[in-house]
Image (cartoon, rainbow, N blue to C red; front, side, top):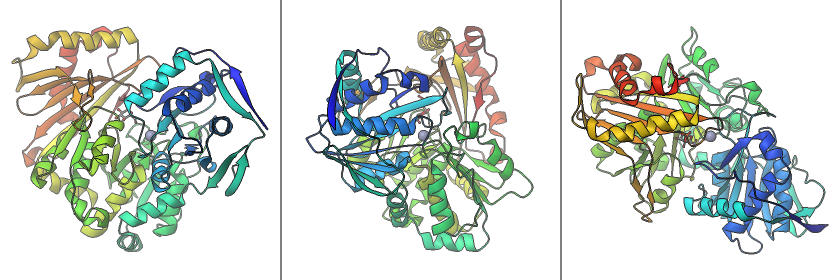
Length: 543
Ligand code: G1P
Ligand code: ZN
């Protein structure tokens, strides 16, 4: 076996977004494309000789090929050991768990999260650091910079590694350990949650449905929910991971998880429903004929955290991304703990958790997590809910309604306009920024604009500043409209409009979110000129 040094030329499009480098599979299949990026990672992270890496992905199309390339490149670049999930599989939270548990130098995760998979669909790669979390912006910028100047990469000339049986082998001087992708993660979950209480709940006839959406969490959910917690077989649906996710869009929201939504709103609805995404880090929580918004879910987990053994000492603080509703802020205030508002993207939570400033964090985009790992964690959120339900013995809906009665309700919805011409989407954002001065003080029906800005964040731990994180229009009653361009889309531009109205009046808590937000939606369309500037009347997805 020999190391080959291969001459290459930079590609101009290897800029990692909020969740790593995401492109269509054919882009990744170009000669040297993946290799250039992997070498750029290795050149930028300055691992000591014989360092250990974790490697795994969500099993989507091109996962296996990419794993083999990365293993051979790691061997050629002086790594001592790679822990790789069996079959090349590791959910994103499980990869984070394994990096932390075995104190590895870092890890490479292959996923395009909730984006569809298949020969013409999306693939992605990202680097996570020793804390188990996504690389900081400094590291991703260094990787990008390296990708612009790269001239060669190294790869071991060797046969493929067998990935389907547990055990160790060698690749040149490097050791490859194929590990069970589920067991370390399942053990961590058992150490946090009251499995005995959840087992009792499930034995008592409480019915659950978990939709794995033919994505990575199928085997995790079957092991934990069915085998360890005793949910009846079949409680986990679409449990077999498929390279193309069965042709679906593995995003756990009301639009894409419609199969589950139909079940929980149907005649024989279970008591609890949940789903997770392609790589297992997102979650959607449903009750009997009831949807819990991710923003409310974060607030509820925080308010009930001490019912869970892993959090019985209380929370150090909470963090939420800027577009996430302020429901969690109200809980933080009541608990007298800090609530941090960060830019969109999980990486901003890492510093806060490493510094011990926050325990729970969440995003409106169906992401919730805690300091148990450094990624959001879909199945963890499901277990957190089940633990609360096992202790409180009330339906999901009444727990949420009691919460609103106590804290008020932050009525919330997000409108996504996908695949817009980039110029038009940029035009909407620029127009909004140009309008700040004229908007402040303006009345729109009962809403009066108090403040507008383009959100900027100074990290309280390292002082780094992230500018241009989204336009905020904040009204005097606390209601908000946020406009933001997606950083994860792979086609054209996606404009997200986030709407939030604070409703203290219990008599109005039964209102459908779209009804309660109707006026704010009109205001958003009016001030942004979205319709005329993009030619788009209706959003692609409403959540
Ligand atoms: C989206 C979500 C964001 C999340 C990211 C990765 O990013 O909005 O909250 O962190 O996916 O899952 P966006 O496309 O909005 O940039
Ligand atoms: Zn994901």
